[in-house]
Length: 345
Image (cartoon, rainbow, N blue to C red; front, side):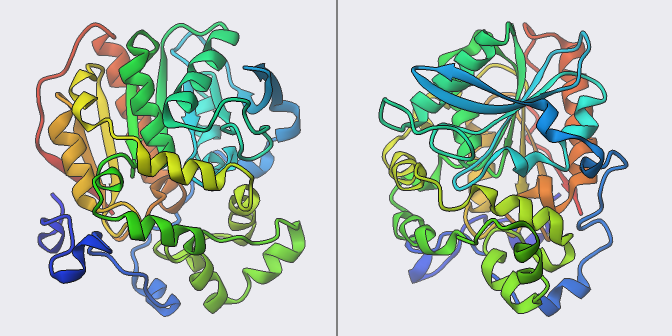
């Protein structure tokens, strides 16, 4: 169960409409007090993979979409979708473990990473169409779909508009609830300044992240304890900063409301949430769980907005178990409603 102080999910008091999340960024010295599971990596090391050999480009709707394609097998393929200001590298700690069991795709959404800006306006619906079209192009039937933040918003939209595509769904600190309700529009506007824009310059970036105070200041609104993570991993995360799609995608997040359609999602769904997410309130995870029948919630304690980076070993274990169980159930079955929460930390 989530701890008592997080039961509310949203901030109380007069500022709750400005900053709905009860969590706040903290100082870097607090990292010494977190548990050993924070930053614990899987045995499958992303540094041992020649990623260039697995990167490809596809033409979708007249523009180039960059993606990584790795792994093989008869199991249902898994597709990772990054969030606002992100890129496929957000899943570096997760891809190798999953690729040891099945084919894995991680794409750069249009306007992000190495993908071109789209011809059509950026929207959550068009992002979902891009994911669906890429799956078509790769000859996929159903897939396991995993999205973080804006990528979770997108993944849920795929499950709504293209239900035949999604075998199971994993929403990781997904946007799409309070962000469209007017509660945290100011907070989202402030995201223009919160989201780090750091030169993606290899060794220079790693040197910048050698300064704990800077690291916490630059990434502390996204990760709970960034100084506990390895510098080369942090350097890869900022590859997605400063891309041309950011402003349009931010407006898309603010302007699209699909809460009334979440009840249409019928595939097995796992909702993963960091208990100390500054950007997406814990209450949003509870609301996704309420609106999506049969969904299960996993709360990761002392974790921020990107559990797959902050607690990759625990995240990977949960992901593998959930996807395997969903395959056993079969895509035509819907699990019984489970309102219980699980906590990892």
